[in-house]
Image (tube, rainbow, N blue to C red; front, side, top):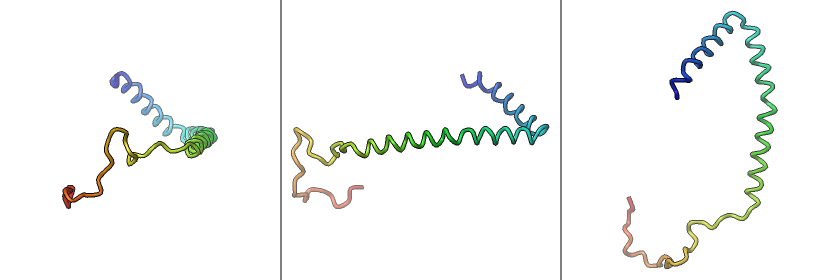
Length: 87
């Protein structure tokens, strides 16, 4: 699958550099216009991520891993059998 895309990609890259050498102002101007046209898309995407983040922050948090697990005894207060170093 990757090999089937390698040759067309190579042709596109070589064509791009050939056009960049032959017509630098046209290629750079078109590239700048494409970049400027994409800026509003980035802003819209950023607003969407911010909205989703605000929605998830407003929802109550899920129970943490430290919460008591049903069916398991709570940790004992006596940790004398615990080693001094764990690693």
